[in-house]
Length: 187
Image (tube, rainbow, N blue to C red):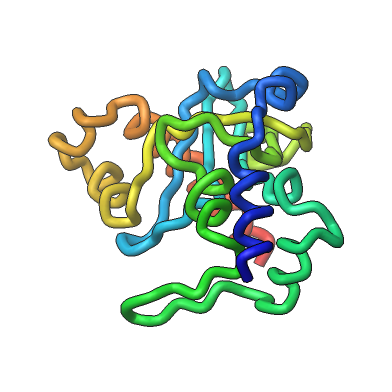
């Protein structure tokens, strides 16, 4: 409905400078999305760094709750829709596009409000510290699964285009192998 679209557009245009100032600023970190080739809304991103023998793993989710207040017209319409529906040629989004493909989409190079879980993982795969934070990120890259796999497989052209992302993927693979071995050992 028109009134829902207007409310969403108003929320998407909100001046966020004060909100960004109070949040954990992660805009200088290598954070990236990995989605399918046809994806248009990017609502989650990852980051990983290695510090000595420990890993800092971040999972960053678009903070939709900042824009969609409980009981608002947008919230009520989203509740009625329950989910986005994907057709071969079209999407019927749960949220208006000004939010789903705009303010709440972790678009490469654009600062976005997020909720982040940052985990410190030791060399044995144990989460030794966890932090949940309201944050602001700026995605370094929008990767597809195919691009990420090419980087992991050693494709020099892909790796040279985004060397910082390729290095993070290597670290992520290293952490995955530790976590996978731990899981296998547990049965």
